Amino acid sequence: MTAQEKKRNNSPEASFPANVVIVGCGRLGSLLASELSRMGSRVMVIDRNSSSFALLDIGFSGFRVTGDAVEMEVLQASNLTQADCLLTTTEKDTVNLMVAQVARVVFSVPLVLARVYDPKREILYRRFGIKTISPTSLTSHEFLRVICPDGGPT
Amino acid sequence: MKVIVVGSGKIVYYLTRQFAKKRIKTMVVTPDHGEAKDLAQRIGTPVLEGDGTDPHVLGEAGAFQADAVLALTPHDEDNLAVCQIAAQMYHVPRTIALVNDPENEEVFQKLNVSVAISATRILSILFEEQAGFEEIGKMIAVAEGNVSVSEVILREGGPADGTQIKDIPFPDEALIGGVIRNGKVLIPKGGTQLQGGDRLIVIATEVSLDQVLHVLAGKGQIE
Image 1 (tube, rainbow over the protein chains, first blue to last red):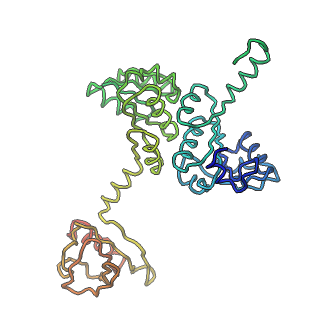
Image 2 (image 1 turned 30 degrees about the horizontal axis):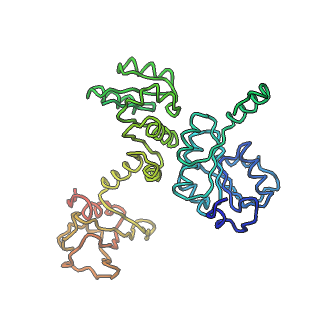
């Protein structure tokens, strides 16, 4: 955690971020939102379809914003300037990458993580300072680890 | 000059046709199979069928040699990705994106897209100019909606700017109730000279309001 992140965090000792914004409330987004909310984070979830919020845990105590996160107005309404961290988990790489960059550049969110399916795009967005997680790379890594345990990927 | 156009629909067709006439070497990237075939036949421009937000597809389209990339899809996030991939991976000097949400225009510029064009914003500017007046606001309907009290803001350089009230061909059923200038209320008299930026309180019947707007903001003639 950097000094800037600590400053935004209400309690520096906490092992979870105080304010989190999650874009996309699909299987991954709703799971992350529910987990973080249970740990004690203040969570804001954004999704285009309000019906997606049904995937959240019953105990979810965060906020729900219905809207398209590639619209500035929606991000402004989501208190992004207060966020310690933003996770983009929509099904569309280009949406995740755009929202991640806007969060970093316009709203100066200290920690931004984007899900990116296509590993080719991942390389590019690392250059822009966006941390990415690629389910494709992770899964392929796991497969290879199992089938070739010795000479596996490095 | 070599240009890559990413997108689909009429805009891509007409633009590519225009470029062909100007002998600009164009490569179109479009995701739809039918459209790719159709475009290639109709304009004779090379068309690559594929997703323009995929770095390999852009490479195949010849991004390394391109002087400019135009991203014209209906999705802002895709247009941004096309421009960023072109600039970062293929060093394309000029990237031009269509933005659908006008607020994204500024965002795209911050994210190093060379030119971001918002059709929404251009249309709304054109419309406001066409309408001829900066603003008409705070309309209050009285007498069962037959008469309205409205605030009309005079445009600088408009037909009423610098004109005395008595010289304005105002319709009979309308009246300037007050002139607000720099936060002060002036009681309008025949000799009061109007200025751009003045806010006029206009009381008018529904029928004459159009004429009022015409003489204050339009060509200055009642038809």
